[in-house]
Amino acid sequence: QIPTAPPGAAPMPAEAQHGRVAPPADGMRVLTYAMRRDRAEHLIELGQSAGFQPRGLLACGGAAAKLVAHVPSLAKARTDGPVAVIDIGHERTDVVVVHQGKAVFSRSVPRAGKLVTDAIARNWKMPFDRAEQAKHSDGFVASNAEPPQSEAWAKISSVIVSELAPFARDLRQTLAACRAKTGFQPVAAIVVGGGSRLRGMANYLTEQLGLPVWRISQDDVVALAGPRFDPATGLNLPVDAAAMTIGMAYDAAGGRPQFDLRQGALAARVDLSFLRAKAVHFGVAVLAMAAFAAGSAYADLYRLKKADKTLATRLANETSEMYGAPKSANDVLNSSAAAGGAAASPLPKMSAYDILLEINSRLPGKDKITLDIDKLDIDDQKVDLTGTAKTGEEIDLLVTELKKIECFKEPQRGPTETGEGGVKKFRITIPSGCM
Image (cartoon, rainbow, N blue to C red; front, side, top):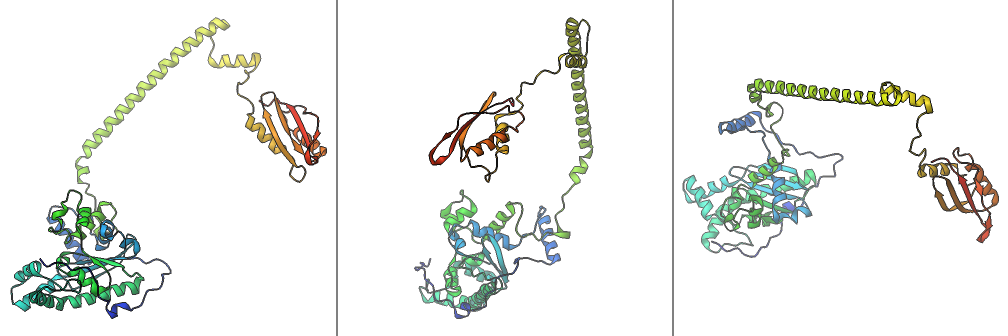
């Protein structure tokens, strides 16, 4: 195994340093995906042939957003700015730029691992399947951070770079297009998919794109695949190759994926055949429940009538003892009202709070009186009011207004004293029948 040199990066290529930046949008930018209907129907049929009923067709944007959110290596990068997810497959590479948990730009590049395999097959004149095996076992791309350790490795790198150089150019153009169309410039990238397993790929793209590019780490494997996953063997398993699949699983697990292409005529229809087969059973169950509900209601009504009969008999016996003849409840109430009127209610007519509100509503305005209340005591017999005013005339005006409260009797004004600054101290006791 070739040792990894300390990380480093060459200057960003000149063509990637310049380019138009999209102006701020007047409204809202919306990222959408589209697919040919025959292609969508073919994918649905593939799922059905495997014994499953696909409920959705998810695009890579939602998977990339969830992947960025669940990868610990990108914890700082995703807070600093947009992050690019580069999924290198066999025939194409999907690039998705994610910002604040949402995909803001997406593009597919028609270059991927197959072209590297073709280059190996042409140079060493071997069948495609053997070239594919050689790429996985001995493939290597050199960079300043990870230089070749021998002439053989340099030869392998030069052959692979012949295809990766145009690939890197397309990626730079893709990121420039993202900046030009959306204004978002990725600050970091993560490379996943089968092509990401090529040794040296992350360091090579770091130098070519001019931004830090990561591969899935051991901590990322545990975070994506779960705590039961052994991190010691995680990097030897193709978790990085299936990273977008895992992200898509996270996207679908929420019940509302960000991008679902199974819409309109292709929308998943709920199978009601089970309900139709059980319609008779459901009907019988509903009738049985209705019968039980009717029986319960009749039993409650019977108990109420029995209790009413018992109370009526008791009332007749007690009224016979008191009035000499049986009477109904209405007769007893009417006779009591006629004899002495209705009994006084034990509830107060007004509460202390009601009296306070009544007093407050009767106080003269600030333009007529300068009033400072020191004490207000309200009980069921009287109201004691102590305070200060500027003049005796203001106190007279206060007493006049308090007399207008209906449940107050004649206010009893105590002696008036002169305090500091010439203010008049007063005390008013008001007998009250409010409570």
